[in-house]
Image (tube, rainbow, N blue to C red; front, side, top):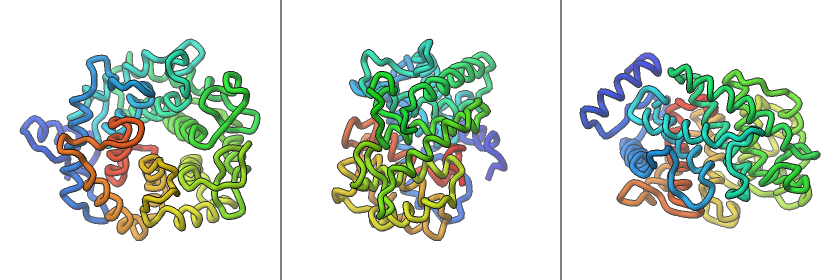
Length: 346
């Protein structure tokens, strides 16, 4: 096996050119089922085929978020903007997202996207993950400039309570909710890890927001304005964001983890995911992976078995919002323990 990522990329490019259909991954402490890699390769190839020449995926909803999530799934294979089987697609996605950066720092279009903070957060995450391996100096500087402005926008968009809403605090009457808050925290943490300045105050206020939304059962409420009913999906996402922020042993973390395990670990279809199964397990899988292989390996086996059982013959997955969204979420989960995305590494 290759000794580092660049060696792996060179090998993967040669294998792809030779018609090899399965990507080679880093050695995992728990063995992988070959069917997982076959399903993953089919999904990645579907994303590659369906990307437009402009770097986006032609969806009616959330075009910025879709491009960022799909690009993140492609990075999970080990490719970068300049190396690997999906380098061209990742570079196109990066260029598309760079083109969506506005003067005020927002990555997206408030005229066509009524929930633009999702796209902004996912775009920060994606661009921060490609920055470290970007070999073209011009694009690297563009990404630095875009992310620097994006961090400022997120700080200005934060609500008085410390969270974020579907739009900026100013545009949304200071309303906040959990899912968009998590996209901002992960995106900001990705930027900070990539060397983009992020003031500690923004992250600290976001952490306090999450803690303030915690209920006695350990779960997190939908919003600081609607406390009392815990949401398993938002709790798992909040835990993943806290881990990204370096809070592994905080006062509230054990209760949140216990609540998440009780409500989500059996991978049920019930109302616990509030209809957002892929979103829920996108984040809960990150939480479990961080716990180590003793908990992760058996959970992963059940999760991946379910995911591959629902894949369509063409390689995509269908479901809520759009096939690009569902496929990207599933592929990110399926590649977690390949460990090529810095933000998800243990």
